[in-house]
Length: 268
Image 1: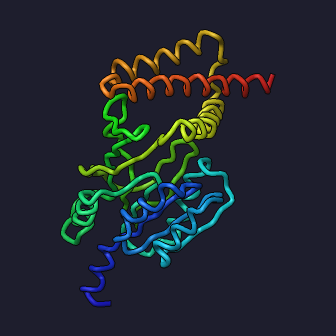
Image 2 (image 1 turned 30 degrees about the vertical axis):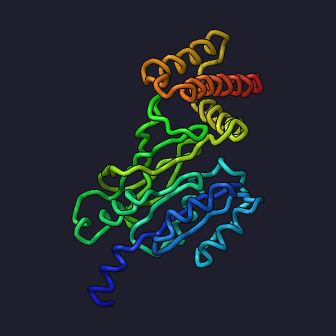
Image 3 (image 1 turned 135 degrees about the vertical axis):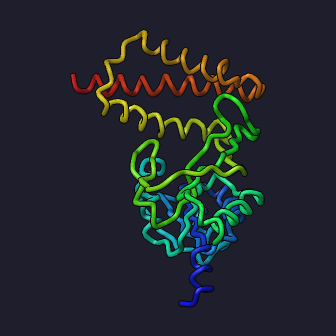
């Protein structure tokens, strides 16, 4: 291998996409990262047209299909994609996210030969969240840093069920350009995510031997969520959408603790 070829390999990027039933967003997601040297898509119990759309846009992409229920095995899926990568850098992205042209340029500059001399082995990217079609900047929604860009040889694996974390050596860096995140596109999708994620959150709390849930704990946790997001994090500045997000997150808090109560009652 010549020195030039080796440097080209060191600059190469693999993008790993985790996809469930996201036929409405996967197209724009893929278009935003088609410039990557390698694309790997993990289809998690995908039963809609997501796979057909992906195959049409990037027929060269490597694919993995699993029957796992979407939303419950993120660490496992990220690790499955990791095993197939052939390049020195990895970018993880979800199907409701898009890489902006500015972020593309920053990533390419970051993984360049000259930049590789820096001490950072992985990077967090600021995520610009969109709620019901509107960009939100308050209530804890921004910058919402997520760890997504990694040197492959430093990333050991992912672990965790609800909030999966990478096991990696080295220092973290922070990029400046936004990763667009079109979460909660409508109320139906919001409720679907609530069903999945509140179950995982409740089980995680249960495994920590959380104190018994009594009536006053509901009010305490719900009021804490409401006050933190609305007042401390100023979600009201995002207008009507900000208020909807606060009320909905407060509702999510109630469901988490109601599910935890249910789990605790089953062992009595």
